[in-house]
Length: 289
Image (cartoon, rainbow, N blue to C red; front, side, top):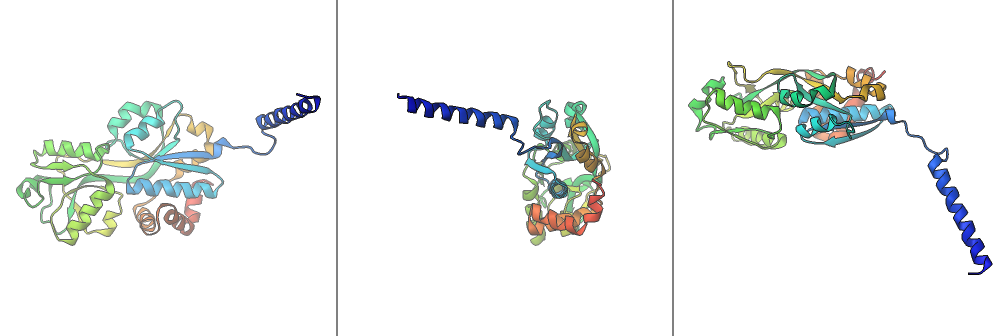
């Protein structure tokens, strides 16, 4: 290797060293405000999708970077309870009853910030043309229902409560696990064909807006009343106070939530939430301002 080649190699080496040095110092080009980065974990439930994407749209309007991750509820609680959690907040925790087992396992590692919806109910639901009104009457009509209760995922609190209802009421029924969308599809088909069906249902949910349905009375109190709570990992409020304030104030009434769900149903998650946000900007922005 001659002197000229050595000189070129030395020059290249110095350029690389300088580039690495500038890069490690940030070069004065970019700075990331970690307090304005938020990750929301959410389940595949209609109201959870609506809460989450409204929060995403509203926060991004105020300069936040928001990531949303869809997980099963048990995984959401487990992730938020980790010391190095990849998530920050969950807007659809059914407390104090329906998600009580999760809260018993993880509650001491979580913080309740507020309530996205304050009047949550669960139970067994039938079309209004079904001429029974109580869970106690189900066994008299097993054949009309094909002995099936159409449920959602086994990780949902309403799934375990329905297993309890089958035991408490000694029902000759089997709970069929599916998903929220599959449950709604089954309801839609039954209503279209004027057939009897019983599903696991809850409020808030857009099916109450789209179908003429009713809860069956629950005289033995298996299905409780809850709130849709907003819970966060420990440390979130201290690290991201402006975002935490937004979630503390976040709350929707039933009519508003159903209107939001309707927009999402028509336009998709982010576009629907964005349209509803623009129409209700003053109301939502007060949560952060």
